[in-house]
Image (cartoon, rainbow, N blue to C red; front, side):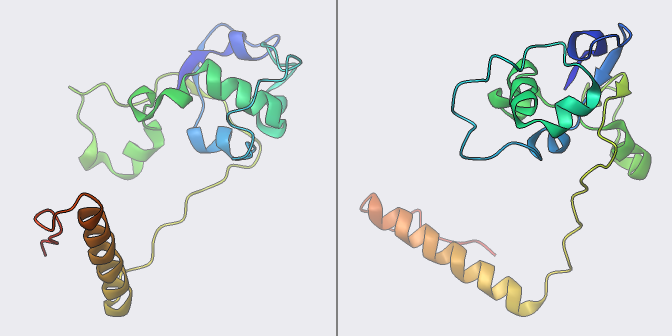
Length: 148
Protein backbone atom coordinates (compact mmCIF):
# COMPACT_ATOMS: atom_id res chain seq x y z
CA UNK A 1 0.00 0.00 0.00
CA UNK A 2 1.70 3.19 -1.14
CA UNK A 3 0.95 6.79 -0.34
CA UNK A 4 2.88 10.02 0.13
CA UNK A 5 4.29 10.00 3.64
CA UNK A 6 3.34 13.67 4.09
CA UNK A 7 -0.33 12.70 3.63
CA UNK A 8 -0.07 10.28 6.53
CA UNK A 9 2.24 11.97 9.08
CA UNK A 10 2.57 15.64 10.05
CA UNK A 11 5.94 17.07 9.05
CA UNK A 12 6.97 14.03 7.00
CA UNK A 13 8.59 14.54 3.60
CA UNK A 14 6.51 14.31 0.42
CA UNK A 15 8.05 11.01 -0.64
CA UNK A 16 6.33 7.78 -1.62
CA UNK A 17 6.09 5.40 1.30
CA UNK A 18 4.51 2.03 1.85
CA UNK A 19 3.04 0.31 4.89
CA UNK A 20 2.79 -3.44 5.40
CA UNK A 21 -0.77 -4.70 5.77
CA UNK A 22 0.21 -6.77 8.81
CA UNK A 23 1.56 -3.63 10.52
CA UNK A 24 -1.78 -1.87 10.02
CA UNK A 25 -4.08 -4.71 11.05
CA UNK A 26 -2.07 -5.61 14.15
CA UNK A 27 -3.93 -2.91 16.13
CA UNK A 28 -7.39 -3.33 14.62
CA UNK A 29 -9.95 -5.34 16.52
CA UNK A 30 -11.99 -7.59 14.22
CA UNK A 31 -15.13 -6.46 16.06
CA UNK A 32 -14.59 -2.80 15.12
CA UNK A 33 -13.72 -3.13 11.42
CA UNK A 34 -17.23 -2.33 10.21
CA UNK A 35 -17.98 0.44 12.69
CA UNK A 36 -17.73 4.16 11.98
CA UNK A 37 -14.30 5.76 12.03
CA UNK A 38 -13.42 7.97 14.97
CA UNK A 39 -13.36 11.57 13.69
CA UNK A 40 -10.27 12.24 15.82
CA UNK A 41 -8.27 9.92 13.54
CA UNK A 42 -7.86 12.47 10.77
CA UNK A 43 -4.76 12.51 8.60
CA UNK A 44 -2.06 13.48 8.77
CA UNK A 45 -1.36 11.71 12.06
CA UNK A 46 0.70 13.55 14.68
CA UNK A 47 3.53 11.04 14.21
CA UNK A 48 4.20 7.61 12.68
CA UNK A 49 3.81 5.90 16.05
CA UNK A 50 0.15 6.97 16.18
CA UNK A 51 -0.61 5.00 13.01
CA UNK A 52 0.70 1.80 14.57
CA UNK A 53 -0.34 2.24 18.20
CA UNK A 54 -3.80 3.75 17.86
CA UNK A 55 -6.64 1.46 16.75
CA UNK A 56 -8.44 4.55 15.41
CA UNK A 57 -5.52 5.61 13.20
CA UNK A 58 -4.87 2.00 12.16
CA UNK A 59 -8.50 1.71 11.01
CA UNK A 60 -8.29 5.09 9.28
CA UNK A 61 -5.14 4.12 7.34
CA UNK A 62 -6.81 0.77 6.54
CA UNK A 63 -9.61 2.72 4.81
CA UNK A 64 -7.42 5.49 3.33
CA UNK A 65 -5.15 2.99 1.58
CA UNK A 66 -8.09 0.83 0.39
CA UNK A 67 -7.01 -2.27 2.28
CA UNK A 68 -10.71 -2.93 2.83
CA UNK A 69 -11.10 -3.29 -0.95
CA UNK A 70 -9.09 -6.51 -1.05
CA UNK A 71 -5.80 -8.04 -2.04
CA UNK A 72 -5.88 -6.55 -5.54
CA UNK A 73 -4.91 -3.24 -3.89
CA UNK A 74 -1.85 -4.67 -2.15
CA UNK A 75 1.77 -4.74 -3.27
CA UNK A 76 4.46 -7.05 -1.96
CA UNK A 77 7.12 -5.77 0.45
CA UNK A 78 10.33 -5.41 -1.62
CA UNK A 79 12.22 -7.16 1.20
CA UNK A 80 10.36 -10.35 0.23
CA UNK A 81 12.13 -10.33 -3.13
CA UNK A 82 15.45 -9.77 -1.36
CA UNK A 83 14.84 -13.09 0.38
CA UNK A 84 13.31 -14.82 -2.67
CA UNK A 85 14.83 -13.12 -5.75
CA UNK A 86 13.78 -16.02 -7.97
CA UNK A 87 10.14 -14.96 -7.47
CA UNK A 88 10.70 -11.40 -8.72
CA UNK A 89 9.40 -10.61 -12.20
CA UNK A 90 10.21 -7.05 -13.30
CA UNK A 91 7.44 -7.18 -15.92
CA UNK A 92 4.80 -7.46 -13.17
CA UNK A 93 4.11 -4.38 -11.04
CA UNK A 94 3.73 -6.21 -7.74
CA UNK A 95 6.46 -4.75 -5.50
CA UNK A 96 5.70 -1.78 -3.26
CA UNK A 97 7.61 1.39 -4.05
CA UNK A 98 9.08 4.01 -1.80
CA UNK A 99 10.41 3.86 1.71
CA UNK A 100 8.80 1.74 4.42
CA UNK A 101 6.72 3.48 7.06
CA UNK A 102 6.81 0.99 9.90
CA UNK A 103 6.42 0.62 13.65
CA UNK A 104 9.42 0.36 15.95
CA UNK A 105 8.73 -3.36 16.35
CA UNK A 106 7.28 -5.23 13.40
CA UNK A 107 5.06 -8.24 13.78
CA UNK A 108 6.41 -11.07 11.63
CA UNK A 109 4.43 -13.90 10.14
CA UNK A 110 5.88 -17.22 11.24
CA UNK A 111 6.81 -19.83 8.69
CA UNK A 112 4.59 -22.90 8.85
CA UNK A 113 6.07 -26.09 10.18
CA UNK A 114 6.57 -28.92 7.69
CA UNK A 115 3.35 -30.85 7.16
CA UNK A 116 3.48 -34.28 8.79
CA UNK A 117 1.25 -37.22 7.84
CA UNK A 118 -1.25 -36.83 10.70
CA UNK A 119 -1.69 -33.10 10.06
CA UNK A 120 -2.14 -33.79 6.35
CA UNK A 121 -4.82 -36.39 7.12
CA UNK A 122 -6.61 -33.98 9.45
CA UNK A 123 -6.71 -31.29 6.75
CA UNK A 124 -7.74 -33.85 4.13
CA UNK A 125 -10.61 -35.11 6.31
CA UNK A 126 -11.70 -31.54 6.99
CA UNK A 127 -11.70 -30.72 3.27
CA UNK A 128 -13.63 -33.89 2.38
CA UNK A 129 -16.18 -33.06 5.07
CA UNK A 130 -16.53 -29.46 3.85
CA UNK A 131 -16.88 -30.47 0.21
CA UNK A 132 -19.52 -33.05 1.08
CA UNK A 133 -21.44 -30.58 3.26
CA UNK A 134 -21.28 -27.93 0.51
CA UNK A 135 -22.42 -30.42 -2.10
CA UNK A 136 -25.28 -31.73 0.03
CA UNK A 137 -26.38 -28.17 0.69
CA UNK A 138 -26.94 -27.69 -3.04
CA UNK A 139 -28.45 -31.16 -3.44
CA UNK A 140 -25.67 -32.78 -5.45
CA UNK A 141 -22.56 -34.82 -4.77
CA UNK A 142 -21.00 -34.29 -8.22
CA UNK A 143 -18.88 -31.40 -6.91
CA UNK A 144 -17.92 -33.17 -3.69
CA UNK A 145 -14.72 -34.75 -4.96
CA UNK A 146 -11.28 -34.16 -3.57
CA UNK A 147 -8.49 -34.65 -6.07
CA UNK A 148 -5.22 -35.80 -4.61
